[in-house]
Amino acid sequence: MTWDLRPSRSGNVRPRVLCVDDEPVILQILRRLLEVQGFEPATCGDPLVAVSTFREGAFDVVITDIHMPGMDGLTLMRALREVQPELPVVVVTGHGTVDTAIQALREGANGMLVKPFTGEELLAEVRRALSSAQMRYEALQYRYLSPVLDSIALTLSTAIEARNLETGEHCRQLGVLSERMAAVLGLDERQQMTIRIGGYLHDIGKIGIADAVLLKPGKLTESEMAEMRRHSEIGAAILEVHDAMSEISQIVRHHHERWDGRGYPSALVGSAIPLGGRIIAVADAFSAMTSDRIYRPSLSLDRAWAELRAHAGTQFDPEIVAVFEQVVDEEGRLRQLDPALEITLNSEVHVPLSATQELHARLAKLPMLEPAVVSTRTASEDCPVAPAGEECAVISSGEGCEIVVGAAGAPAAPAGTRQVA
Image (cartoon, rainbow, N blue to C red; front, side):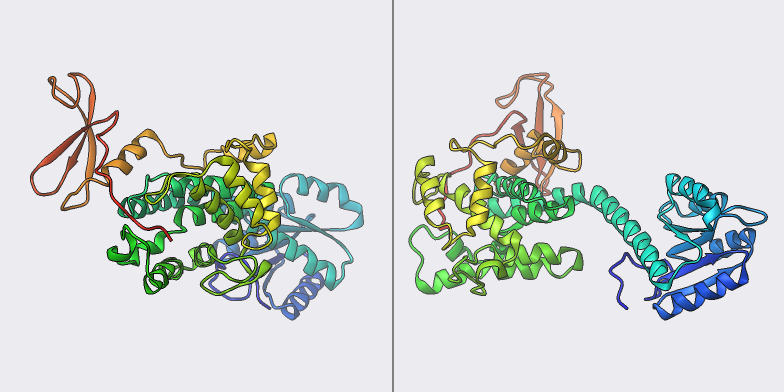
């Protein structure tokens, strides 16, 4: 049996279960049923001894009787959770103690078994308890990791756009639009995060495209276009080196697929294209059409909407185009979503592009020999950049010289040329 759970504390493939009951027959039944179902059970008839056993071992779930001499099941649950706060616990009770078992559920027990119980009932409660613990574990991972992944993704996307002479805003815009579309579709927070970061990193593979192709001012040849199209596979290869990024890598790989199967790199058709890829394809197209390009000015909003709708069902998933219309209005502004969604989308796990990050994005385009170390100082006297008493951003090039730029902004970098796939 394969369990899609967080790594076992014991390091075993089979989840370890500690069974605590003062009735030896019940312990024998629990052991036999759990072994048959692929668990690794340990039994204990004394709750005081069970506390020591738990501290010495590593268990994924505990099954405990409610009424036992020396310590009842509620007290045992509290003692074990002092050691492992997220421990899943299933309580066992007789018909006469259901009220006590309900109290245990109110105090955080994950499941309840009423004697006599069947093997199916036991398995269902243990699975439910483990699944509940898994969801809490993933929620904690999301809350802790989301700001970190956001920061890394935004940094990488800024670096790629700086190399490609972009404004530094396109990838962030894609992340915001794609996440809101995922929320409207009812995807959970973890899936929203995956799609948001997929938007930030969708073009990361351009780091592997030669400047002669990436920055070419004129039309690309057929062979150059083939080289440019490799960026989706390069990006996926960069991300899939770590299992935690596998879902994001698939979004990056397939964000240029078409609903009709004429896209790249795999010519996937319809729903075979990962949902995140279909979402980002629509957001990417609209963002590109409504932004200035070196080879053309931005399209009008009316024209962009007409193009998007005209290609629904051929280039784009028509359902996703309909969802995009729920997220963006005819004037290109974000629509106000359901208040509950807005609260989640504006929660503290997100990392907005602050003024400091915008400054860093501009500074990243300045030529330098070593990675920039950016700090702020207060000017001691008037200078061409900032009056006395105002802050400046100071970039140390690593070669013993400094470039000082006003914290409120910097002169625009020289215009460059590029070809966009």
